[in-house]
Length: 175
Image (tube, rainbow, N blue to C red):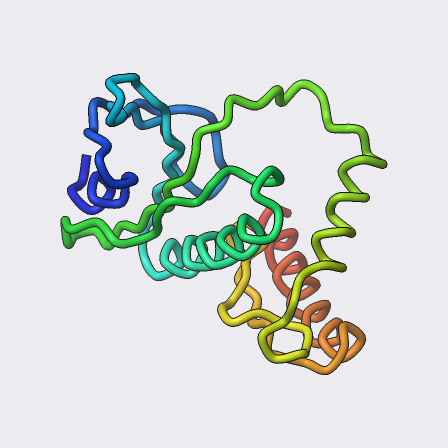
């Protein structure tokens, strides 16, 4: 395991092992086992991706997760780190969080989930008073610049054409 990931573990934890875990279309995912200060073992979730795209994707996930976790710590896994492997080639980036063994066979009740999601957006505070985010955000592998705008209505016309352009290109490539 790269030293940068080990250093991102919470203080006092000792790296034990890493294994592939789960699937992802754009990243490599794994489970890290670490020894906690009290002697118990604890799992952590790791995502790895390459190149500048990996940096953008995980910077977004890190910044977004920290903001969401501050607002609603029981809504998402606790984020622990984001960074670049110390091994230089290829450029490799990681995101580290709390490991949550989820039931992926059933979805949460839609009314409960959407109510919490709405509460998160209602209760959050923009540092500028506008709509947007301080870093590019991603939908999977597609990055979006989300410049600060006075309203959601001002930002939507900027986001939709990019979605359509990328989707059209991908569909033509598959034809």
